[in-house]
Image 1 (cartoon, rainbow, N blue to C red):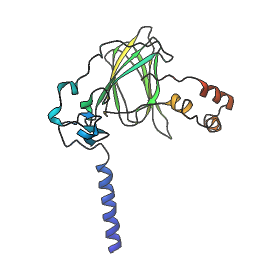
Image 2: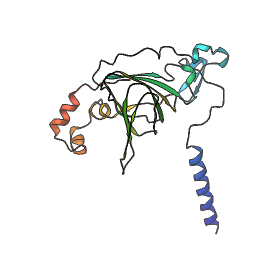
Image 3: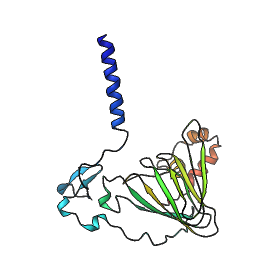
Image 4: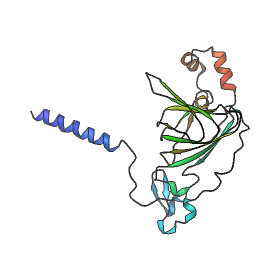
Length: 224
């Protein structure tokens, strides 16, 4: 009987623990402006914090998202991030923003954000967007978005945007992390440093090894 009670208590504690860590911890202070000088700060969530008494409005400010970016690159898009690297005051707050510029028929290639969900709104143009669910279903959800339309990409899932219009397109997206991270699938698989063994990729993608080597020899553009 004691063994059963212990087991029940253990399971309850395990469940409570899993719920407690299901999302980021709430900050225990108003803000934590990130600094690089460890001698004058406190380490919190990946960054050192500036003394709050020394914080300024500029620690919470960024300018320039109204400026179109150059999209003359192999993928035809450019992502302008506004995360903790650009606004130090975002540290511990769990949000960030990006502007994405697309050339006609440009794309933001299939990628994932390991630490954030994303909500995207189209400001100009027409985008074909989508995401793929995890194994074993790998179900594709897609939508054509016009100006003012909004679409959500769940955390960690592979997703993309493709400008299907004949004119430039612009979108803005909010992400649920101050440092969401990005893994562009083609870049990570075929452009890793050092390269993944071609035998591994040839079998995984059911390709001839020469095709794999050709893909690994390409320059994989990072649009971020």
